[in-house]
Image (cartoon, rainbow, N blue to C red; front, side, top):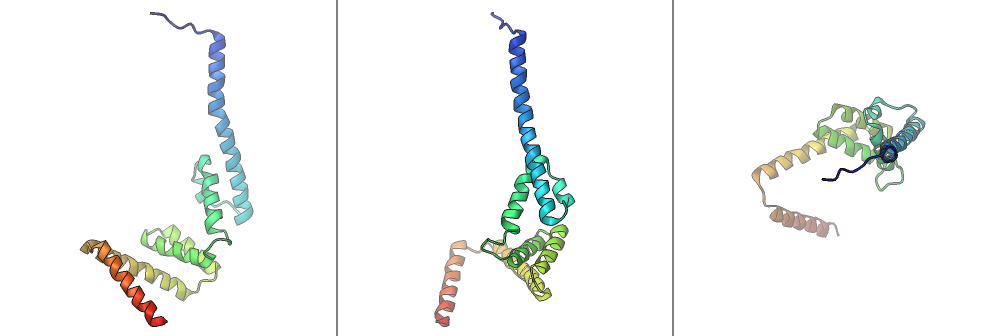
Amino acid sequence: MLKPKLNVGSFVIAASIGALITITPAKAEDASATAAYKDIQATLGSVPDMFKTLPDVAIAGAWAEIKGVQLNPKTALDGKTKELMGLAVASQIPCQYCIYFHTEAAKLNGASDEEIKETIAMAAIVRHWSTILNGSQVDLATFKKQTDDVFAAVKAKSQ
């Protein structure tokens, strides 16, 4: 059986390639994390601890998602609607952090106390009927047909 001969040069090249593969992405991740933290600071006035719980490799993507959808005024939904939706979902999860955040963000975006109450009531109604429909194993195709019929009748009445 032949044994491969390893020389010092081969070892140095292999070690260098391994080091580049290991170290280079870390520097890129650190740079993107640093840039994200700077942008969070510039946008929000501080970097809340919730962002610091993420590993550096995740912070740029997480911030891009929040900034690109939730904080973006040029999306199909306005800020108030997005935050009320966030509150509805948070109420169902339930997440006390999210409920607090989205309630305050909804208010900041112009939501009234009545709109906040109605959002929570709608979340409760949807959950209630979801429980009934799923628990009763209502046939989905029949449900869709009946829903379409109801909307067609409502539309016909309104014209």
